[in-house]
Image 1 (tube, rainbow, N blue to C red):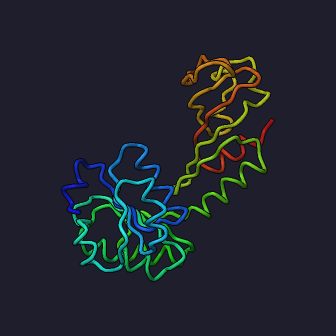
Image 2 (cartoon, helix red, strand yellow):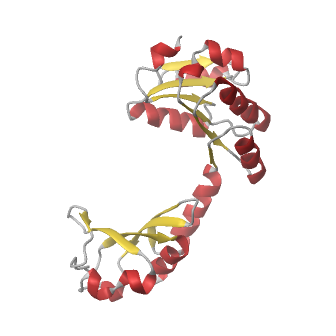
Amino acid sequence: MSAEEHRTSVDSIVVIGLGRFGGAVAQSLARLGHDVLAIDENLDLVQRWSDHLTHVVQADSTDAETLRQLGVAGFDRAVVGIGSDIEASVLTVLALEELGVEDIWAKAISDKHARILERTGAHHVIRPEAAMGERVAHLVTGKMIDFIAFDDGFAIAKTAAPRMAWGVTLSESALRSRYGVTVVGIKRARNDFVYAKPDTIVERGDVLIVSGPTVAVERFAAIS
């Protein structure tokens, strides 16, 4: 299995570790049309995913030479989904870095794990459990229908339109100046999504897509 067989476009990605996270990432990438090479040391997982993914290989991902033989050096991007075995996770990132993979994404299960991954070559570190925990907390305790926070203190949320905005334009309600958030768009029941403009009128039952500093978005979603 050579690099040329996989790297038919810049959308070729290697996913290492086929647990719940890695398997879901690999399957989603494949569904989106990307060329995916999936690698795991566990034969049971490899056999399980072989019915869902085109290229699945059993291999020791901590060995740079093994990865080289699989053609991984020809990939621009890699996702390391190994979480429970921190040593294997770190050694895999080191092996990918040694091969010159330009864009390495890695899953971390703790702050310490994340710091180690960053220092050993990971360009992006993901903590899915922590991110999901924060997201669920916002959904449970507030009016938010959905919430996405970014690392730089910025967030996007989907929330019900507050009472004070009903029946007036966004310019008249002055949500941006009063709450520090920007209304990006509005979704009304049985209507298409529309991008927000100053003269857009908000109605009761509308769902707003808002963006801004995380704290401002949280405060805005809390009003009724």
